[in-house]
Length: 170
Image (cartoon, rainbow, N blue to C red; front, top):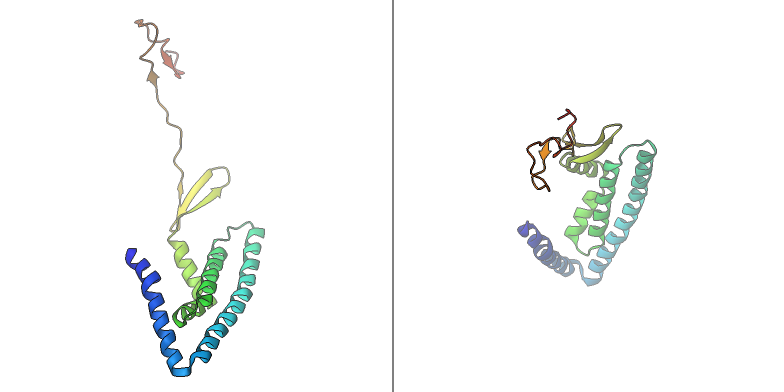
């Protein structure tokens, strides 16, 4: 995990900067800046359009009484794509534009959803847990048993007064 964070926050920006410098040397400073601005603008418009579609899918899911898990993950992927597209750099733009492909985004969302345990409400049975295609019952929080009070004011031989919670007449 630490290696991934190192790559994300240190190595990736350095590579992005090197690529921007290299492209700036090939096509010039102003065209490079213009290219970064155009990709950010086009990407933000695409994210906005697709985001409205995803929002509509979330509302339709809720209207049908379904959990909108897949559309919500789709929206999260779009949010990440928007972040990547607004970040200056060509590698982040490439990742952002890849996440704008609806079929690929849905495939990623389904894969993530299959690895997550989802809590579902079952009618009449309380909460149930489902994960990887199967439903499991929630364990009961009631523990049945008998007990005997040891610290009482009297130490009588008749322990029937000390038992609590028994229905067997003892």
